[in-house]
Amino acid sequence: MSAGKKQRVVVGLSGGVDSAVSAHLLKQQGHEVVAIFMKNWEDDDDDEYCSSRQDFLDAASVADVLGIEIEHVNFAADYKDRVFAEFLREYQAGRTPNPDVLCNAEIKFKAFLDHAMRLGAEKIATGHYARVRERNGRFQLLKGRDPLKDQSYFLHRLDQSQLAKTMFPVGELPKTEVRRIAAEIGLPNAKKKDSTGICFIGERPFREFLNRYLANTPGPIKDDRGRLVGEHVGLSFYTLGQRKGIGIGGLKEDRHAKGGSVHQPWFVARKDMDTNTLYVVQGHDHPWLLSSALVADEASWVDGTAPAAASIAAKTRYRQADAGCDIAPGANGVFELRFPQAQWAVTPGQSAVLYDGEVCLGGGMIARAA
Image (cartoon, rainbow, N blue to C red):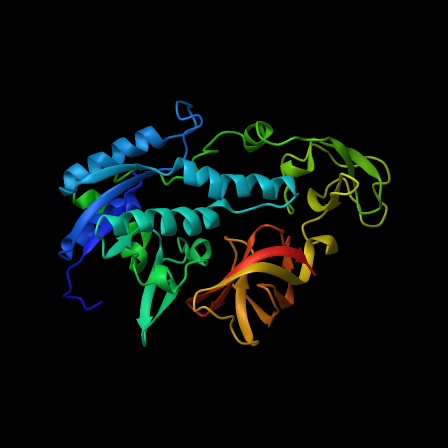
């Protein structure tokens, strides 16, 4: 888009500071800006943990200050069908899904995008820390300029048609500058704390929430030598690499035996769904926590095709530095990644996202460590 072209842009206003500043920046650039607040969860909306009512009030206050219209749109049914049902299926199967990836793919850049287009939008905008670049008629998804806030990992499933209609106004800015702008223009949410997690869980204890929806069968916790060290409350409630909340202390007996020490913390290392056994190991760098390869499926490539078999980099979890790897694309959306340096706690259900420098190439869902 040329800098001078003014467009009708529909902004997803969440009640947070990032989307608020995004709307302000678009107005400054002369675009016709309309806001939409997406309500994605309503099962326990009167609950202390779900903040959507307050978020809407904050979004409406921002729209008022900016002088833009805001519409409240309910996507809760779509969210339950397309995101939450899949989230539960993954947990039931013993994997650890990332609902933010699903929500972006199914709600924010499908249901919301479709709704915005019906309103006559030429583009949509969100407060994500990422960037879109057009090159020779193709669109690239780039990391946000602020390395501490980059959210391209959660957006890796976006395709050419979605990126062609998407703007990320704060992607060029560090978070500190976004906060400064919000304060300067008098936004009511300038100091609002960043939201963590997702609305349907909010700040509530995660296990308590899952308990409502998942059957759980307690079973044995064993160490890497097959010794019984405790009982788990249901495999769905644990994730690989987890350290807190396992419910076991150090082993008092055999404290000097090879591979175990009362002083070493325990980590979840494996789940055996067939025997309903949770395996734990002591020490952050235990071999069971390290993987030199992984297999992923449900591949989604920003450019529409898998990157050529070459050295690139990948993240196997969000808060992680890019790790050099080789890709071996397979059939039916399956690919394998091989890492010269072993990766820690590669977790089925999480996303393996590929990068070429600042360009996000796409990725897939980790099926297993290999």
